[in-house]
Length: 308
Image (cartoon, rainbow, N blue to C red; front, side, top):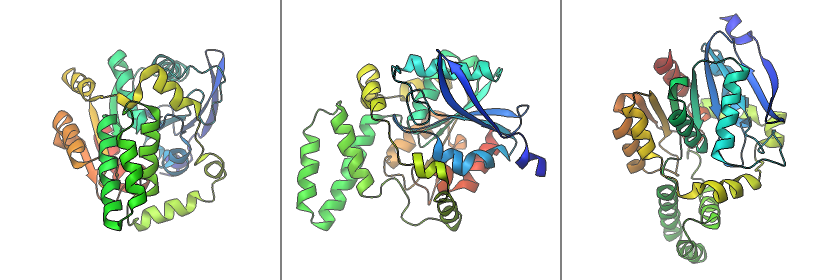
């Protein structure tokens, strides 16, 4: 057991398209590989790295964590912020670590990339795990606006009700609509549970001391959402048809959502469940958008059960 927790913590920087990406690995290369695809666009893998990567490796996985090109600790002034570029970098990880197959663990926007990669390279994907994955962007925005409007109505907050009314008149495909909507989600605590478990409290308290979390935890790379919106129209993506196609092709897909993740309605989670099956999804009480930290034991147990 001690060997599992102390085995090969390796920091790696690898070259792709003549640029350097930040990559860190946890665990033993001979174990089943899991590539973590972080959220955003514009975010990074720091919080997962600080809270969960080593613990997942301790369950017998070789965990690969990286920041996408032009985001977080992978600065690149020439980044294009396209799916082709992002998928090529995932392919670069496969080549660097000589992976024949890997599990793609896609958190939030990372779930989109997991599905896109599997659509092109199904034979290289051992399984996909969607963690609070953003699969239907427009439905998420409508969900958020309905929830914050209800909050403001209960508070009789006329000013913010006017702001919501203005957002509803915006171009729903535009980045401004996306940004203002998610801004209200953050203002109203829709990303996290109302009451954290004792386990989660300890995890969040621990991360406050982490130097990387202090530096990068709330850092957003502004050019990434602009680029992905311009080139890939990510604010209008609906990945459910692609999810259906992958399941039809026998690609193993699992999902974990937090019941208190205000970005998703029960209807959205039910749509995912209908496609992948009840036995391949866990809808965890007491968890928000960072389900891997909010209910970590359940999250890790699910992955061990499904993937081993």
